[in-house]
Image 1 (cartoon, rainbow, N blue to C red):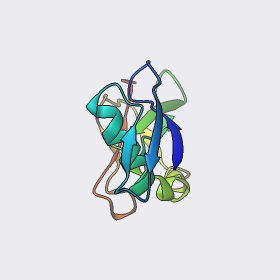
Image 2 (image 1 turned 135 degrees about the horizontal axis):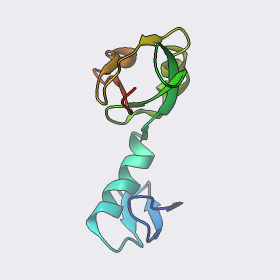
Image 3 (image 1 turned 180 degrees about the horizontal axis):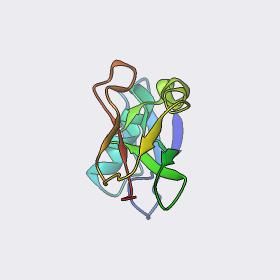
Length: 114
């Protein structure tokens, strides 16, 4: 039995996930908590936020994020993709910065206009 704190909403339910019973979840106050508990133990994912260099903008760095959560095991590999990225202003929110992160089909996108 694994114990987790749900992060889907601010309530922070204390979940218990039984790996031996098809990942059944208890302690959740809503269905989203049950889905989170099962997913966290079977295929954990995370959103990534970071920054990249920008030339010709008001600021020298632009915040970026993944367009959707990526598998947790790919975080370090995905971050390395940003090391040599340099954008040219103007940059718009939602502009694709890196396409197809590590074969996931998910992109890094700009999170601010510059």
